[in-house]
Image (cartoon, rainbow, N blue to C red; front, side):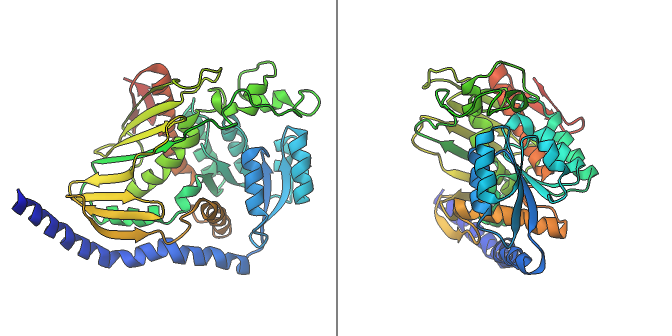
Length: 421
C-alpha cells in the first residue's frame, strides 16, 4: 500500500508540474489582465447611463457601490412602487424617478437597467428591458423558481434583441473560480467525482423574519400593492409578504435561491458542468416556528451528466460551513477564504493558489458591475451571462420543486424540460 501511495504521489506531482506550466497565462488573463481591461474602460468610453429598478435592501446597496464609480456609470433613473424608498434614492442620486418601471424603460437617458426587485418580477422585467433595447443587470436568482420557462424566455429575449446581460452572483467575479477552472481543465484532480459547498447562518435575518415591519408602507398611499404583486397571486396587503418576501414561495425560493445560489453558481462555473441530470432536496422547518413557508435547513444533491455529484446545504441555525471542494481520484481543490489549496490523493497540500482578483465581497460587487459595463461597450458576454443563469435556474427550479414535492427531478437536455421521476 505504501508503494502504491508513493507512486500515486509522484504521478500527481508530475502532472501538476506539466499543468502548471500552461496555467500561468490563463490564470493571469482571468485575473490581472481582465481587471486592467475594465479599468481602461473609464478612459475610452463614457459612463453607462443606468436605471435602477427596485430600491429596497439590495437596490440601495448597489446604489452605494455604483456612486463610487462615476467614471463607469451614471445613475440616471430610479424606480420603486414604494414612495419612501423612491424619494430617498432619487434625492441621493439626483436621478429621474418612476413608480412604473415601464415608464423608466421608455426613457431616452437610460442605456441599461439594474433589477433588484423581488424574484417574481425578474423574468417579466428582464424581457421587457431587452425588448426596450436596454442592457441588463439582474440580481440573482435570474427568475422565479416555479416556472423554468421564465429562464428560457429571458435567454430568448436577450438574444433576440442582441442585449448584454449579467446575473448578479457577484462571487463569480472572484478570480479564484476561473483559476480553479483552469486547474480542473488541466486534470489536476483527475475526473471530477464529488463536490460540495454550503452556506450556513446561525441566526435569523430581518429579510426572512415575518415579524419585520416597514412602517411607512401604506397600500393606496405610499405603496402600490397591486403593482408590487404583479404576476404573483392577488392577495390583500400583508406586511410580512412585503417586508420579508424571501420567506414566501410565491415570491422567492428561500435559502435555496437566495443563499445557495451564491455557492452553486461559482462552483458550477469552475467545474463547467452545464445543465444538471438529477436533483433531489430534503430538509425542513426545524428551528423557526413562525409563519414563514421556507425551510430553515435544506440539503440539495445535484448529479451532473457523467459526474460529478455535488452536495449543497444551507441552514439558518447552523454555525459552521462544510469545506468547499472538488474531488477526483488524483486529488482535491479545497477552497479557502482567499483562494484554494491543491491536495494530492493522500490529502497533502502540494500547492496553494491565491485569488488574483476580488477575493473579498466588496471587491466582487465592484468588479461584477465593471464587467457588465465593459461588456456593454465591447458587446462581449459577461462572466455570469443569461445562458449560464438559465443553467443555474434549472438547478434551483428542480431543487425547490423536489423539496416541496418530495420527489427526485430529472432534466432532459433534448426537450429542456425538468420532470419528477
